[in-house]
Image (cartoon, rainbow, N blue to C red; front, side, top):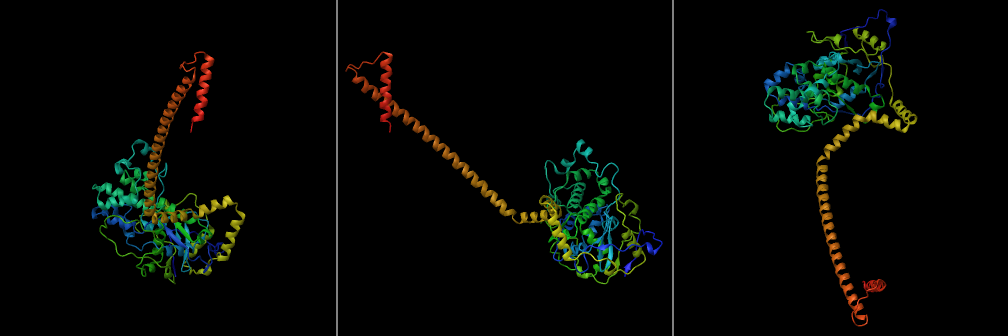
Length: 484
């Protein structure tokens, strides 16, 4: 049975105005199998960061807008298998800023409201002038040197190491380090080796303003964009890499299907991504890792739309998008949810079969020009390729470093040999020059004496220009004839 908990429900007075439910992306039983969903978000990052802080520092974060992340660190870790299960069970809608999924035959919404409920992050509207008013701050007096000195690039892993080693003792600076690491590696990850953004450093200068900024909306937009950009063909690829806080989708499903928390696995998903080890282990304040198994999908109670928190912490009116598309099918489905309709797979128009996807792929290949096809492939597989490249690079990092050292040694050896050869050749040329000068000098002297002795026996030297010329020509000829 599906829960009818709903914040806002469209008013459709007549049943005849009701539209059919949205189509399924893939027909039931025809969902892609063997697809690996990869996340740039490290499943261990939350625990690593929080374990590096002391109780007082944790209390500061716990009382901030990032406080619920401490609770999330103790929930089941990201499951690539579960994410694949959900992504392949999407419903096709016109909505730009929300996604719908099927679970146990029931629809489940994933919107900014659900994201705000499970993360506790501020998700309201951006400040009036811009999303981040940082340019003025950067031009006036950059805050980066105050946190990281003259270092140009700082990785998240290095920040976590500094927290463990207590390189900095100041509590506020340590809180800022932790928040920057959370922002880059948990909420807004786009690669395996995330670096600290200079813009985010400037934003954290005022810690209170930083916590008030709608980072939840930023993280949700990144995640939703990564989900929406993939069609049936893209979702049928061997691997799918999702940017952003993809764990939030799993958190929403746990809230929507409470029974999922009753049965979990104590092993980590094979497709989760872990960050590199850091020095020191700190205090492990969390229990053993747990992850979800899609086999839990059965005839369960499913809350299709999460209820807003009763204390009124979230203002749903601020969680709207001015450019959101209207979808009559979604509105009708919301009405059915409010009327406690018993959903099952037969309520949704059939989606594509594997053969349909194969035909679509062939059509794209045949109708797209080579250059356009390359661009299409790049758009679809951009993040997947980037993920695989980074994994391979990490695996061969040591070998590459060793190879670089050997190349440097060989290069220096070649340079030394070239220098020695140059000196040796130069020495030979100098020696050859000296020998030639000596030879020519001696030969000229000998020829001179022989020629002078042959002139009228008196050793007289010709004085007229003509005789001098003849004399020199004779010496030149005899000199050439005597050359080796």
